[in-house]
Length: 454
Image 1: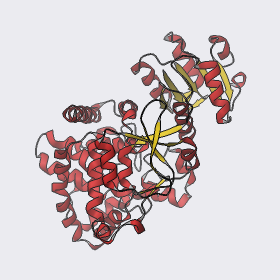
Image 2: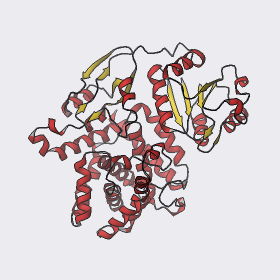
Image 3: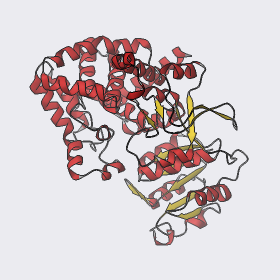
Image 4: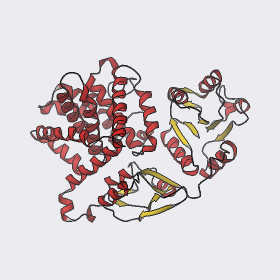
């Protein structure tokens, strides 16, 4: 069964989406915050069985959704999940009469009430049996980035059988994770209660940590090498081959040698690597993916790859906090948790970094422009300049698409089951011009690598 969940507030949408999928088997939830994206999901995915929505979207209102569904003769049930009573919403006064299965549920509601409501009134199907045990899943490859868990971690043997493989507070090794993946374990699980306990934390995996004290002397000395191996494994799990990694790595040392000639840049890049957090990790993965996308460019593809890799390694080095780098859009709900000063840091970091790289020398204007534009988008809703899409270079477009893809990978915790969701979001963002061409290159590359791995 497929559910479309339309909610402008990212935290509310993700929390309830996870809750639904944790309590019901064979349910796939597609998330959306806008009317335009929702319509694309409805038209792209066959047989949406249920739509959950609030009255206010990022680009419209509930009445516009109802008009679209009515005009196109869609009959799926609707759950109006809102603080507003439908009687007080323009055009929604008769929503409960449009379909006998339509319902209204006042927000906020307790999780158990939400589950009962979904189960009793909307999702009465043999295919949807409430699970006895409630778990939250994430891709096994994410364990490489840490070495200690704050909660019990399980693997799934069957629909109803899970076994614990890592105890709460226990350190684990990279070799252990390799064994799990070698046995085909692509997802691991924690209790849903443990996930909800840490849900408000800014960290992408607050229930995992990196325990430096648990490392031996040799492990401490080899941390950079170990970290690179972990990043290799993550990139491979996403679908990129050893060849793609080598393409990037052949140029990393060159970039770092240029950086080394400038004290400020060198210091910042080293700090990013040593912090062992999102900033360097996602920069490295963007470097691999963007360079692979550029392999078939007309002209000097080698130079293009070097420029993209340089931009990838440098584009966020002026950000001191990983949670700042995790903000991909100024429309992200989490940005409201930052102070005005922090928001300004996030807004201004593309310009600040671009100026620093330009001043340092050794890097071309192409690289400076990529860094300056990496948070822009073809809809002119990015930052810092909201540039018209016709003004972007080919390298800008490649980098922006790769950067967005990596951001979505992190948002969905590299979960292979979220592949379709990621593709839908990418298609909604990059619909025309060279952006669309770049996205097609990325999708073909992912499919090619997926077939090669099989």
